Amino acid sequence: MNAVIMGCGRVASELATLLDQEGHDVTVIDTELSQFERLPQSFGGTTVVGDATDEEVLRKAGLMSADAFIALTRDDDRNAMAAQIAKHIFGVRKVICRIYDPPREQFYKALGLEAISPIMVFARLVKGRLEE
Image (tube, rainbow, N blue to C red; front, side):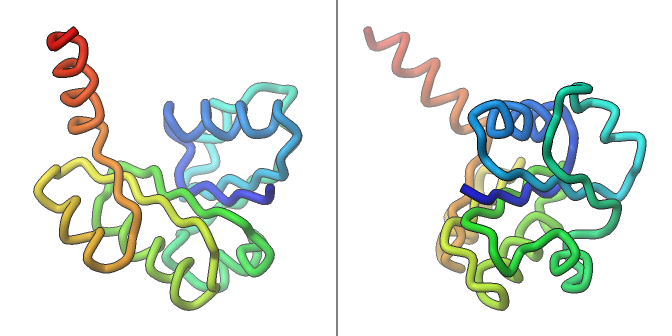
């Protein structure tokens, strides 16, 4: 699988590392060069400095041939914008968008985006454990 990840924070760097270790082609985009320090020395993927809402940056990251795009920054609006560009302009098959504001989850799903709210995932996990 060829995956492009927007952001290189804690979650994104862990995901990039995991996918890379599993043998997938991984490209990570972040606006800050220093964020790539989160990736281990052994990371075999590609890093691109830039704004993933910019189509030229996405082209440089190889989005034209990506199987998946995962937007994992702390900015819901940027995540949604980049995800829409990936899905509708580049035709990426699997697009996942992280959001922090749970009420937006349904709105983004209405736009055709697979939206994941860490807060809601955690809440469902805890609820499930309490019901056991």
